[in-house]
Image (cartoon, rainbow, N blue to C red; front, side, top):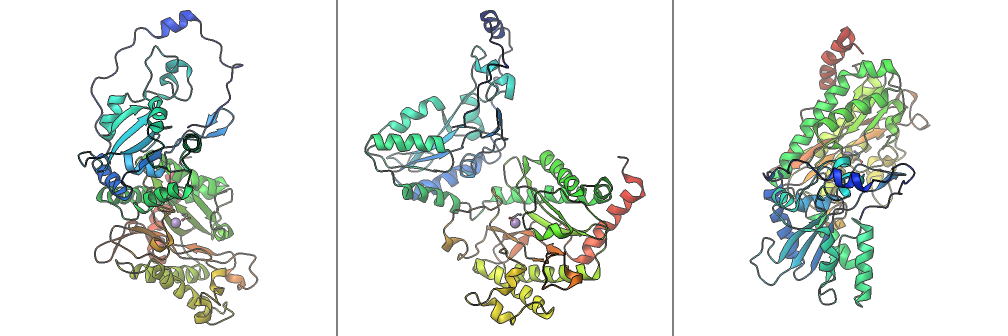
Length: 505
Ligand code: GLY
Ligand code: MN
């Protein structure tokens, strides 16, 4: 359920009876043609079947979640819970307060195997209803036309029902049917379901609910063909955003507060190509690159510095890329910057080289961090040998300069599958269809007294999105340059066009 927003009687004048009568008249009928199905619709039954098979006999409740208040009477832009989006195919802006219920059935003769899937949502109100003109959150005059029941059914190929029917349907057989809900998706609905269960003397066992959340997260560890294509497209659109940023580097320097300019240019491309950015853009110049999640982005871009840009386009289907490039603002790396850059690149190549089915997820990190530890040792920074540092129990000294992991799963969430069990994630094995990032870095803070002067303030990360294939991997973000030479060659014409009068801003 959506969070409450304050009523504002001081701002909206009451509607007269004459207005109410008048506003309901003389509108063209709604289009009788039903919309075409959402692009993911052909793929969602298999996903629902996979979950159904894991919880025979249980009622499964997967809410989209409600609108969240940003401040006062304005909401954050809406984004559905990822598990809901994955099982319904509903993406951008859809569908606040909706709930997918998989109801157990005795027969196999249903679209979801052992469950019948119903999407409960708030269909559009008729124009005779006050919602049409007076409801700033849901009304057609305020937020646009919503779907009818038939239209939503056509979009999703699901059975649908009005959300007003959900309470009664959830109450049915609640004492004899085990119900599981994704607790974090809609806290108000979860509280109502807990109250209902308690009222019927059914113990609320959060662990049973959480097993559903875990299963839904693990369901996304391997991507289906549609998801792989979406990720390919998200990477392609992300590369376009990176190129636009690169071409505007001189403008970002000239304007001041260049990190914000970079964030804005990438955001424009993300918003235009898809839903938005998949996470807050990290536009970190100079020493800011040494703050791993620098999203304040209020710094200058200075000639001679590096810009670490970590950004991803999230498509309308909500699949997001997650790519990092570290770019010399003036087009060429200094010797010191190149030395750090090359070490990170070597670590990334070593990590990518081990990516294939059957390899431990942890081995990708191990390959990267072994290179990092060795280079740090060569540069005289490690107080111990690389072997001692790489010993998990007694070492870890190298982590001072790369405190994060090398990889995470990626998909409909930037940190996808975050509720998967450790044995399937950090201690898991790579399988065909998985998509992970490979993103080593070296971070030398300007305040780090162990680091020689010429390296202080240099931070480098290189991040690509890697699809595990039957016999190896495919780098989905390979269209962006990776080696220092490639980066310089890629920047040269972009910066040259700008410097020779490409921008008239
Ligand atoms: N791109 C941000 C992160 O992976 O945490
Ligand atoms: Mn990442």
